[in-house]
Amino acid sequence: MSTVKLGIIGLGQQGGAYANFIKEGRIRNIEIGAICDIDAAKQERAQSEYPEVPFYQNYIEMLDSGNVDAIVTCVPHYLHPEMGIEALKRDIHALLEKPAGVYTKQVREINEYAATKPALTYAIMFNQRTNPLYQKVKEIIDNGEIGAIRRTNWIITTWWRPQGYYDAGSWRATWDGEGGGVLVNQAPHQIDLLQWMCGMPEKVYTKAQYGYQRNIPVEDDVTTIVDYGNGATGVFVTCTHDVMGTDRLEILGDKGKIVVDDSKKITLKRLHKPEREMSNSMSMQDMMTLFRGKGPEAIYEEEILEFDSVWGGQHLAVLENFAANILDDTPLIAPGSDGINGVELANAMHLSSWLNQEINLPIDEELYVRELEKRRASEK
Image (cartoon, rainbow, N blue to C red; front, side, top):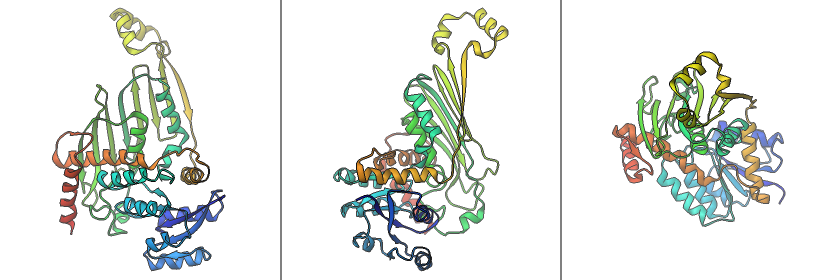
């Protein structure tokens, strides 16, 4: 097998983009094996744009057809684990869109099932992990260039969405249809990157606003304090109502500091001596002399790295990597089992805001499901 026959479940914005990438020949090791969608209008579109590709209205029928080697789940979040499991049961490889699911209990189920099928490829669309900028940030941290992390701060408010965006689909921004708001729709990539680069926190405390600036029942504004358990802390801020949004990440270590602006530029400052060593060796007079008589270069060296990003390129990289793992065991950029970390962080943030208390990780999964079901029931 030189190419993977991919079944695209859901021909919406994301599924349509993937289909076009493949049709245009931008992914060398994937072909479209079949398309599935419950919407009759999508069937007409598929027959017009991809006339040679089999179309199904039932994804189980597609899985049983023999036309696909693998699937990608471009469907509402609640369905990702279920569809992934059904594919794996039939020895079909699975690529889940983000997030891996709405709550950890259902994601744990597919992770445990996938572990019984080690010969199959199970991955998640964390395309930002292919971004050279964030790969570089992780490399800097992993290499110990800024030392032990003391604090993280990420303001990511570039997710502006008008009311019309939410009104376009009855399932959007609802507990029953989507499982939440900005934490499960717009910000999962940053939540994943934060734990991928800096590690999982041990506790979170969240203040979330529900329907704050939009007519929706779910969160559209979130401020979270994270506690890494070793004295290090962090703040994560996100929303969908800031039309002049900010994307700024700061990671402070005992030997330096990383600042990322607009996901395009890294400013890296490396201390000549670790901060504790400076503190222990310098008198107050030394400090006054340093800050009055010398510039910052006396304390640290600075490096600026700038990056370009082409829309779609990162998605292409994950799709190609997924197929390469199937074909020749190329290591996965984003194994599916990693998806539970971001879901757990989002669940902890929700639970903290619902109960107005600090939440320990791992979370109480049964408590989360009970609280989520209350909100789903209230919508119905």
